Amino acid sequence: MNWDNRGPSGGASRPLADLIGKAMQPAFRKRGFATADLVASWPDIVGERYGERVRPERLLWPRPVERDGEALPEPATLVVNTDGATALMLTHELPQVIARINAYFGWAAIGRIRIVQKPVTVPVRRRRPEIRPLTGDEQAELDRKLAGVEHEGLRKALEKLGSQVIARNRRA
Image 1 (tube, rainbow, N blue to C red):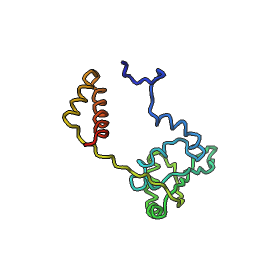
Image 2 (tube, rainbow, N blue to C red):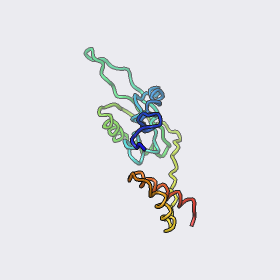
Image 3 (cartoon, rainbow, N blue to C red):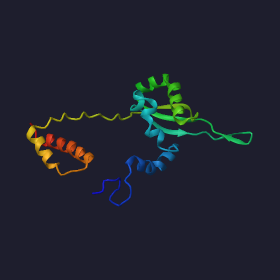
């Protein structure tokens, strides 16, 4: 069996994140974002405190100003959504947040941030259920079933998957 990175059609399979960015490009452009990079990297840019509670909504770019016959880029206004309490904290840290965003872009892309107070849904983090260890008989049965798998990486992956399936399906 061929275990290279080929999909069912024979072409190389690609991560979904690579494909979704291109599909979402028109929607992001409509909101003033040239690419999805700012939205996708938002938690990394602004940090844990604001990553989930503040959402970038749109970029408002001013008309270019010409100086000496050359159009110079002016910084944009970033519109963000957040709840009231987070808006108050964010207001006090706007210079640092703007500096972090501009450091991400590599130039002074953002000149100011406009805060719109509206509810932002915070994703609920579910705890993974504890998986019990396999009994000696269960481990022996799994080892017997995987004995014919020669590829080391595949065998380890199947063993991990198999142990989780057995542990969840057969409650002790």
